[in-house]
Image (cartoon, rainbow, N blue to C red; front, side, top):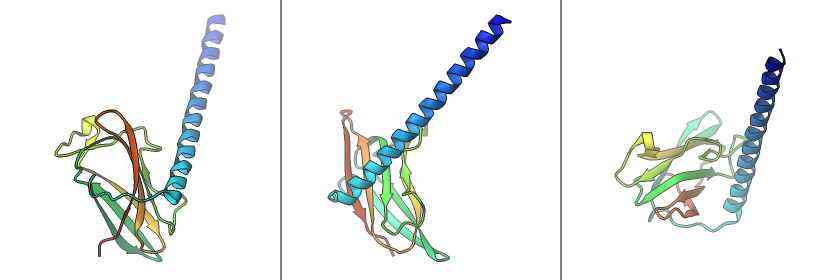
Length: 159
């Protein structure tokens, strides 16, 4: 009986600590999200053309617009990508992001696709806005020398 109670106590303790770990990861991700928003609002814009192709499309939906930002045709290797699209006309509570709240990794490499190793042909971010306008995007990645780099770029929509 004592062994059963001891095992239950251990399981309860382990379960509570893993919930605390999840909460601290969520808190960290949310803090990082807000830091990125601040960087986008105050940072300078870099041209994205040397890095990859970025296209923005809008489609009308009731009293709003859905946008699709497609990033593909990389001109290098970009591992462990974190990406966030920003519009001051957003209709949702949060700006669409990739790699911030996900446990899955996303990578892009020129002429290489291997979903098992998290290398994709391209990535896409979609959101709802009240007005068509250019988007700003935060793009962070690990390069071939394992250095973390980031830049902010702006993309105009295609008609």
